[in-house]
Length: 116
Picture (cartoon, rainbow, N blue to C red):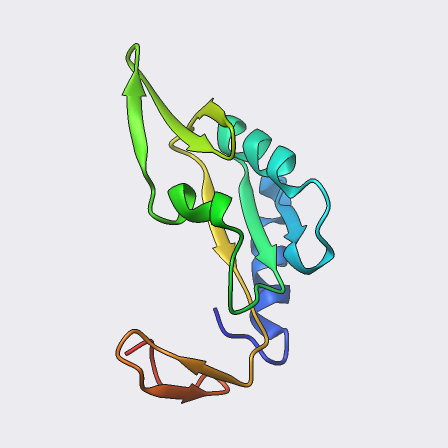
């Protein structure tokens, strides 16, 4: 979500507080994959904060929901690890970009306009 004022971020944090929301700040780096792996396995909600214009390539299978069955269990490959994928897992992200280009190249300014 494009959230220049942080209002949606606060709303999501409040909404998911009782479900043990995991907040990951991508802009700070760190070991976010380990936190993400645990959330995926245990079905915890995740909020990716401060998402930039480019994402870590290791997140691509998650964003495309590239799950597969292994011995009857739904799994996903994240980084170098293959982990069990809980159907309760939810993930969202926020960014505070001033300008964003949608799929068709049209610009949305401060959240006015859709992804194209």
